[in-house]
Length: 117
Image 1 (cartoon, rainbow, N blue to C red):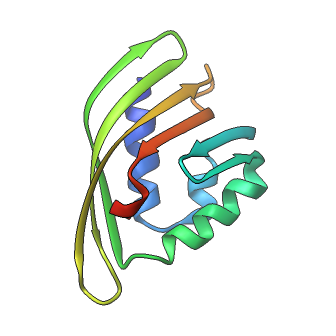
Image 2: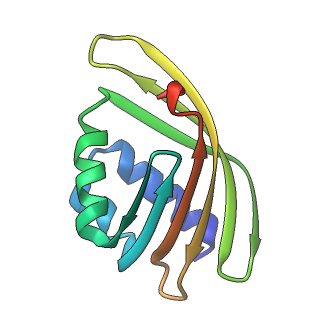
């Protein structure tokens, strides 16, 4: 499986709001960082996704450009969201993933403007 396929499947699952399934993409001791937080392990990552998935009625993340090297893939994305009040929102960002040979995300660094979300 290509790294971009792992990333696309992870984002599709995120849009389905299935936290348990989202966590299957991460290694047990994965590191997740963003402009607002640094998380380590599935337990901390779970708490983030439990809050995030409830924040929007729908969310679709589309990879637009990417480059791979060794275990890493840097991905530029577009994100279309709809709030529970029906407001449409749009964001763009860049993520850097490190993906193990077993296709698990072992590191995810997210780069985005928090005000867009």
